[in-house]
Length: 354
Image (tube, rainbow, N blue to C red; front, side):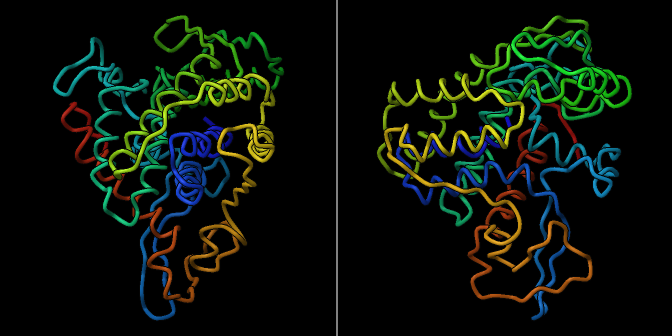
């Protein structure tokens, strides 16, 4: 999914299930910030304090290109945060037919995903719990959108005969797909953003020679119901009343999926935010605005950083409320999530990635 799904849809579903606005916004911001937390390393403060954070995404800019070529870094970013291995929906201790790569292929609502949700719930009494819920919802949503692909460089991710049946793919897009498939089959790169466009009906031949047909509208709608169910589980664990899904709200979600047809997730986000502000959902009108970096962002509020990237020699003013800031809590949750996925959840399935 892209920003329209991870931020706007997650907020809508959180409100529908019964979360109040402030908590729903933390969950939604965290769900999207997984794609925007591109800095890692140590933050140093003027009082001698330090804080270590990790990145949950990389860009294709020169700054991050080295990480794309680092297999271990791929394992630490793409596997736990974007392409959760599905073990072919088998239980721990069971092996799918074929090679090891079959274990790593992302699969919707797998047994691994259930274990991820269980691990998240165990943090319910922690200050970073809602932030971890958002991170977990990001990964859970991506098990639907990214299904069939693996978060490593492997021939299984190669794409041939890519066809979009209700969207005009440009010649440049076609060339880019073929180049990535041949040179760098990582994740769904060779499929471009086809897995992430909610309205798209498309098909391709994967690296195993299988013909895959995908109806994203149906897939994303099913994902919305399942995310709603998992958010309801979270709210129930917190001892709060869980609302039943309202048919009109679910119909509006599907309508937005179908009608917001830009290939740019940012454009679709603005359409979603207008829909929410217009009061299209049962929880009423809300004016939302997602700011990932710079003034107004969680990071700026925590350490007054208005630049996109941090310099290694920067020293930041330590503020008393840093400890309880959303930015710090997000990174604590991010580290907890990755630790559990890599060290506790995947090994029983015979999956060692770090």
